[in-house]
Length: 292
Image (cartoon, rainbow, N blue to C red; front, side, top):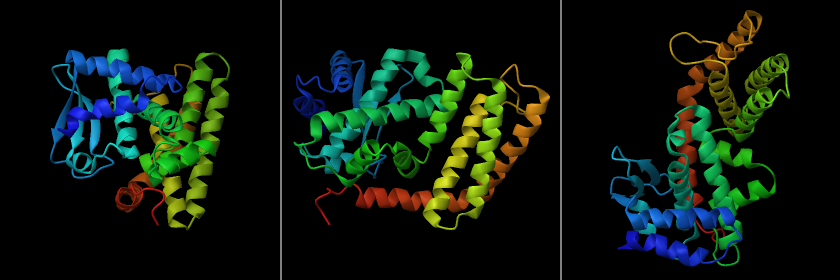
């Protein structure tokens, strides 16, 4: 059965090549978990798409599972770079769950997407060190590699993952710098106010559909990151930075509501746009880059 061959075929690609050290360690750690029965593959015939048809989960029993969907199963080939890239992505999640335990399941916005971004970076490491020169890449892998090489990972995450890496990274740096006494709270608040105003104005002035979508995603990411750092979702928003005074709260609340109004008003429009975008990625970007 193909599922039984997945790890072996991936292992043949990685072998003893340690050029991608993170990939090498992830693969060999996960291989042991499968061997000891702490991890397993599970087939799901209801997953009819390829790009979202493979994913990691931890069952209530504690067992670590990688779900393999019908289309992944039907289209799998030992010579398909994309299938191996998708698998190493999910092995990264399995690895993180095993190594970090409960931290992996802290369901905050920043935790969920941070692990997802890290899995994308593992894909890049895998493509560079194990696939280039040996496989013909698909258009999706080629896009990921070009975005990385052009220092535009944000473009990839906006159009493929529907989240802005740039905005996410900015808030992560705010938090880290604040905790390390490298930036004042005043500076953070002023920057948040400036950025929210700029995003809102640029969104309102853009007419091109794809640019409008990109700004919508940046606004949505900004709002979610703002909630994660400043607010809590339980009941009314509660300031979590202990040093924020009421004068800041009023300013932030104003822009927060403006961001929320844009998201709420345009949610259905962009939900449909995302569905069309996902369909286009599934149909066109899983093709080999040598095909027209």
